[in-house]
Amino acid sequence: MGRFYSACIAVLVSMGSFLFGYDNGVMTDVIDSSNFLQYFHTTETSAIIGAINSVYSGGAMIGALQGGLTVDLFGRRRTIQMGALTCLIGATIQAAAQKLAMILVGRILAGWGVGIMSMAIPVYQAEFAHPRSRGLIVGLTQQMIGVGSLISTWVGYGSLHAPSTSEFQWRFPLAVQVIPAVILIIGMIFVPESPRHLIEKNEFTEAMRVLRKLHYDGSNDDWIETEYRSICRTIEVEKSISTPGWIAMFTVPKWRTRMLHGLAVQVFTQMTGINVISYYQTIMFKDLGITGSRNTLVVGIYNCVGPITNLIFVMFILDRVGRRKPLLFGTIAMSIALICEGVINSQDPDGSRTGCSISGIFFLFAVSVAFSLSFGPCSWVYMAEVMPMQIRGKGSAFAVGVGSWAVSALWNEVSPIALGKIQWKYYFVFVAWNLCVSLPIIYFFFRETKQKSLEEIDLIFEQRLPDRSSVDLDAELGKEVHADVSRANIRDVTIQEH
Image (cartoon, rainbow, N blue to C red):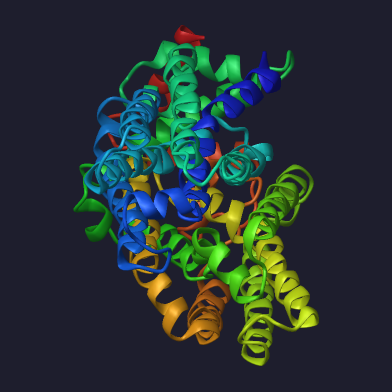
């Protein structure tokens, strides 16, 4: 089956990322619904709106950390199912909400489920992807986040055409979350577990079967056997270093370094300001003089730009140029766009000047394009790649839970207030971080990982593998195996299972 089978799995699993994007984006239009605001006696710049968005991020943070436990205990596949089921419950509660408390509980549960999937899906995708296409496979995470956000926008746009007296304006967009959740719950029954997780659990026969099903093209038996041996040996080496757990990723120096890389790329992604724009773009466009149905239409067009750019990037560019260069580009390009946006807003505070409004829209669109060519896909790919097997689950959970969702919860809470109080000056908070923190750290400390197997990346971070073939890697790993595991034993296992 090979590539086609891997592609089918990647598309199905990315339905969880679609749910991530839809859940993130749906509140943009919900809070623009006059019926919703009247029903819950609030305004779109109130602390209540900030709370609705921040509890979602808070729930996602808890879910991501919980996923770090279940992804190793129950496996990648079941953890993703668990996240989808939690989202299903949360979506049902939101759509049926009679009081603000129900909206908050539903958002917490939806966030919890999305948090679980946001750490488990990139890990699963990275572990079954071929090194040559891992950027594309894991990059589908951001692609489907963008598509989900896009669909939520147009669903919201259509729903807002209902009469202002109708609860359909906001109940229907919230109810749509149920569909991808059900598809994922059922679909994950039919996909295999990660071969690396199977090997860690000593299910060698099944691991080899899955590897062949994922990557066999009719003539690459040697590559599959070498990959299998490399995974076995690397896991054995890591087991000899320390017992896997939360403490180990802080106490083992080389694991701590790699966990911090994954954490940093998630923090830097949030500090670009992209999610503030995603959540509160209706407010930003109103500041530019775009109101009424025109506002929702512009939001819908804005949400088309990111997925289209991201698709082109992950399909044709990411696995060629790598991860580091796009991240550097994105940091600089997004900072320039935000500076221009701030300057334009300062010259047209009431949004009455048409030229300034058009320019402001252009630079907000430019932020989305730059993000989709950099942090959007690269943050998920790089995080999943740099984590060693023994802490990949918990390390990714910590990076996503703290680096992404905790930071997101902070910005979701303060952003509507900041946009109301300091307006355009708020953009410069993100510019300062990008240029003073993200840019130098990425330039001096991030390593390139393109087209390397996860086991080759292990040695890159130990500075012992500049550019070697799989045969060289196999020999290197063989020297490091724990004393009671010999080369002959592993070869015998391979032949027997094969």
